[in-house]
Image (cartoon, rainbow, N blue to C red):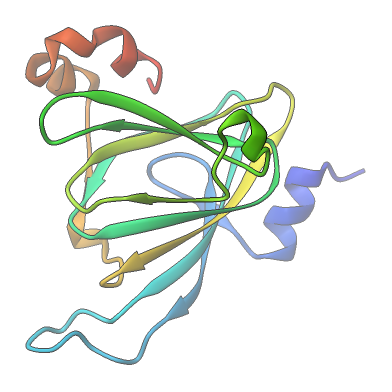
Length: 158
């Protein structure tokens, strides 16, 4: 019998993402940003099972996260000034969760699932559109050297 995670991966033809979890691109704009070869926007479904991490990474453009189902997801961020923050993307607004969240371009971020034995399904909209040449995946040592005050926070996604 297929688990809900296996069903979603199969239903949406998802593949493993280099940062962790699974994804499928569902939209890539044919419009280009002026004076650029970058498309206007891209959209993916992103699925992260409990116990797995979306490792620390950075992209150059803005990324919106939209919650769909399963467990709420925690977006962990290191801001450009070296501060750590996390935001729970989910539907329980009475607990401070946000149904959508913007990670600004240039931020270092990753994610983890709030609840055990579950998964998170979100959509991510990147504008201008996502390109793997704009994607930077970090090693633990790099981040600890750059942000020694955040060792505990950094270790959450390794």
